[in-house]
Length: 137
Image 1 (cartoon, rainbow, N blue to C red):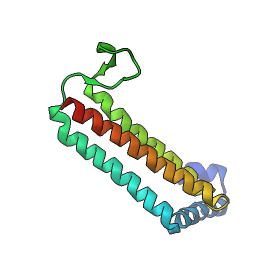
Image 2: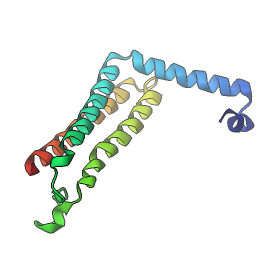
Image 3: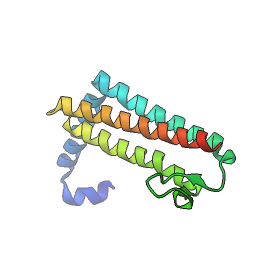
């Protein structure tokens, strides 16, 4: 990867870019509230994946997932669709945490709000998933 990047960036600029991003991540982890929110988010995601792993064998062939559709078979989906929630939360979390890293220096409050809103969304999605699984098992 360094060979490909060195075509576009001289070595000194590439090293400066890597150090700059490293410093931003260090500043990100120095913020106590951001660090707590990040750990809570990923702990919830690990919990929900473990929960799905342990309850997977008990799930019926069709689970109610699409509650916005009319009542009946339209709401049912394969249990594999339950994985959409944790993996979309993971992608959203990673994206938002990277955004927070880069806006922390200039907009500290915005970065903290972004991290805590992401944590809240992950919690709500996990709560919904647990509620669906308990409804059908």
